[in-house]
Length: 118
Image (cartoon, rainbow, N blue to C red; front, top):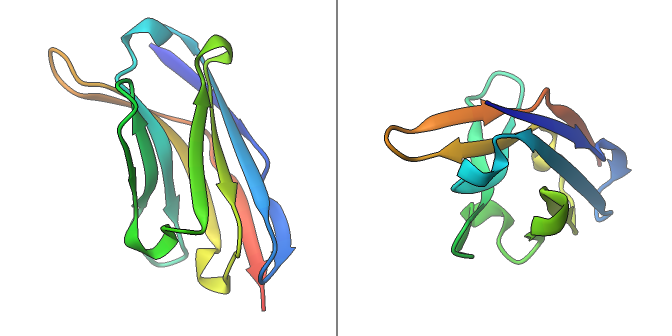
């Protein structure tokens, strides 16, 4: 099992910045990837950014060039630096940790609200 604790959401004006943090505990050695998903009202949860144990990073097209995901392995923490925020970035951001062997298991944080005003 993995437990995830997020922090860093809030209200910001368009063009502003926020940094989200997510710290994992429990069976962290088995984590193959950590990342961030978001869910806007009335929409499905979508991938924002993910970083794999080998260092491979993927971003949603909508956030490329504005968001940066990074990790501190010593602290079992992943960060999401969000710059140039837009109103369409508003939503609940969820930290995600994945085990991929022998079968995929997903673990989720409680979610943190990000609101971008125009």
